[in-house]
Image (cartoon, rainbow, N blue to C red; front, side, top):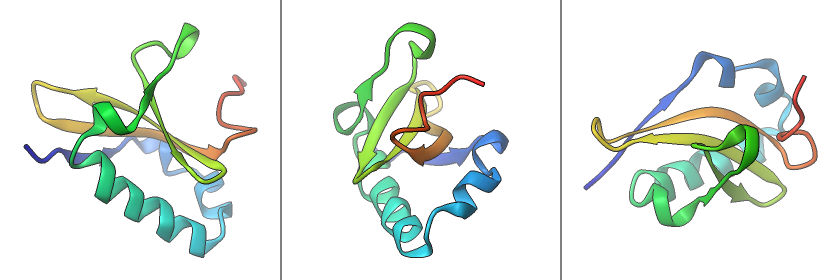
Length: 89
């Protein structure tokens, strides 16, 4: 079963544009290759305030997402460097 990918508006922030274009392409390919096929096994579940979300590791960057099994979709909520992604503003 192939999952569809949706981007939450909050994830299309200026931080993503700050990521070098070559890395952005790698991230996009990882999302298409891994999260459309098997988002449960490719990502790791998060805890505490991010319970219910998962994280996909792409080099030094992380893609935070949640899965809607009923609609067979993956919702990307944030993409950023690993040192910044888990900070709560």
